[in-house]
Image 1 (tube, rainbow, N blue to C red):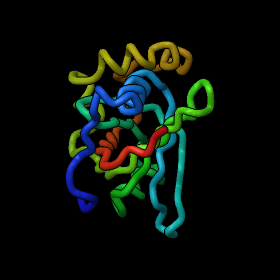
Image 2: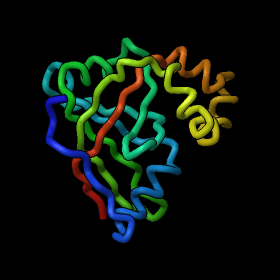
Image 3: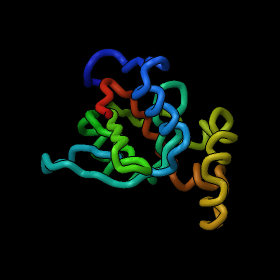
Length: 149
């Protein structure tokens, strides 16, 4: 990846960092920002799983976000404003498309993904396994900077 060196290290003793980590583990929707081939920002709501200090996003392989990540690895992951509208958390970082398809990750993340999204998956008549087959491109986001208050 060509982005900034080194992943961001969260400090659990820092109140803002701790709150952001808790939200990364619990929130179901975030906004994922990439840079389009026209040079303009492209942002879409996504489901994600926070795993080992990175955000994992399953995507259909022919989407703009996958194409954009392949062309430019600089991205944003933006959480909603929180219940009071004042808990802003934006991760700036880099992303890559895993060489392994999402289905290969199910053994490592399947239980956590199902725990987080089971009700939503059921409404869509999906399981984590069928989700991983359809959304076979796995985007791995490595944060380099936290912008939060």
